[in-house]
Image 1: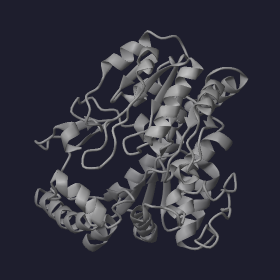
Image 2 (image 1 turned 90 degrees about the vertical axis):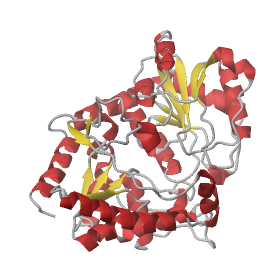
Image 3 (image 1 turned 30 degrees about the vertical axis):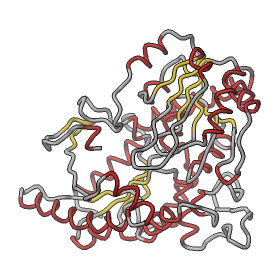
Image 4 (image 1 turned 45 degrees about the horizontal axis):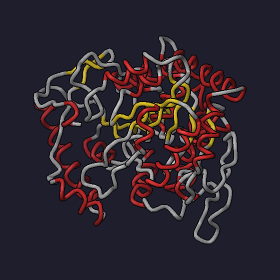
Length: 424
């Protein structure tokens, strides 16, 4: 974030209707340390020790400046921030950047309110009240499956669920119209905590400052100029986010599936994350003349462009919400975490997706023939028309919910009012 924003001066930066001041603390790591700490499992432990110490210093500094901190807000991967808030008697809230359905899954797992897959029963279905479907074993967030290889993430998220009674609000990047039943159910399950759907967040936080951005790459205007030259609903947009690393074998099949489909595309192929031992993806040369390949593009603007017909995605929640709010169907290739749950919702509940894969646990490479078939299904014919109509309906709902008087607008206003009035 510091590298992306080039902010060292601590000045206020305009975002939305307000301002942000970025504050950083040094974790003491070198790039070489990062990989070693991840391998040893000490990364999160060291972050907690340094974070607790530095956040307390930060709060004390602001208090001395006569600018007392009114609230601490954290995401689920740093649950210990709630402990700092409790120690200093400051109200705390959780920013939940997954779906409310996933929040319910973790809550039910932590409190043993439903049966989940185990080592001895790895393939049982999971039923949670007020969900629109029964989850198959590979449709729950994969961090809750006994085969999960990211148990450290599971531990941190469940630690946050345990601490929910210590917070006064859960701010969720979703909206009532999208997940109304499960939002209402979670509000009844956790009466001591306000469940606050305030999304889609990306539609609210518009900045006028060129310094504020979330990506370390430079904006590529060339992407938008290229899209401007294309006809309506003619381009497949492909991106697997900033963290997911798809196997090269699957990349090869996607590339040849694109060639077989005859569709033009915009494909974001990111270099591997620095400090991790991951291979650099290689695309066949014959693909270069059929579309555009970049390391980064402004995803919000791309999804809003009329040339984009569909989005081949890993189904991370940010990408899912951005696509729904932009009226763009998704071809779903989830890998792990909440992605597998988001994919089943896109296909079976929101009705804006077609399934390409089931996730890493499936251990299958989707063939080029299936890739071509699903891309054409999402872009051509009656099914494509149905998907786009459903997506446009969600776009209208998203626009209304963040507009003046919409449900997310009201929920966020109520959250701020409680802080100002010290009602928490």
